[in-house]
Image (cartoon, rainbow, N blue to C red; front, side):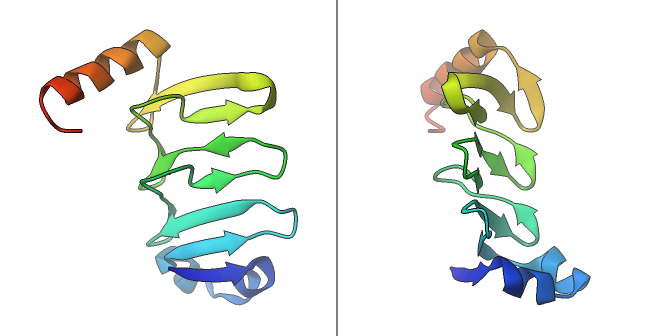
Length: 104
């Protein structure tokens, strides 16, 4: 996977940013994972903030089936599936159904 620093990202054209796949390391210490220009990571958070804030995204949409998709410091959380905010109970039910169907 390609890794670049924020100064390299700033030099990319808009078209190059729209198709970029890799990791960007920002000056603040944050990290962003991209696939085809969209936030995307399947095995962890696609955005890791310097303050401890993390977001799980796939194809540019907040998404996580095995826990919260947004986590702030002090453990404030939000649950999202395919870009739609859901309750913790709905996320747990979705995860259980996917597991029963053998999809995870």
